[in-house]
Image (cartoon, rainbow, N blue to C red):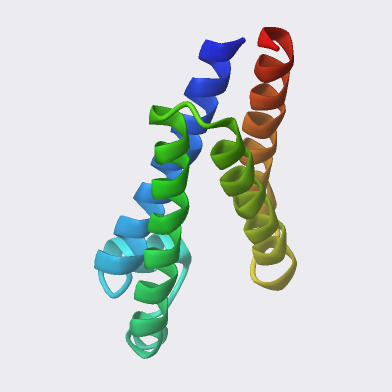
Length: 121
């Protein structure tokens, strides 16, 4: 169970690193425009905001990786909870699919972390 929880946390962190790259470096690029469904005008107007969002995604990934490599359950739980809240908020305010792509994997990882910690305690 511990290995499954580590893999799940790692996958959530990698997702947020990918989002960081997309939002910080490819937002105003045809790839980013296609992935996020934007026109070049919308992308250009919101580029700085997207870079800020990307940075926050990087902080989430960094916290998850820190918790993973230091094997700090409290860090993993805190940052997974942050991802879940951000995913639900994004799903409600921006695009419903964010709940599935961001919040659901983090919720699964959180449950796995809790279960793996319970079994070893």
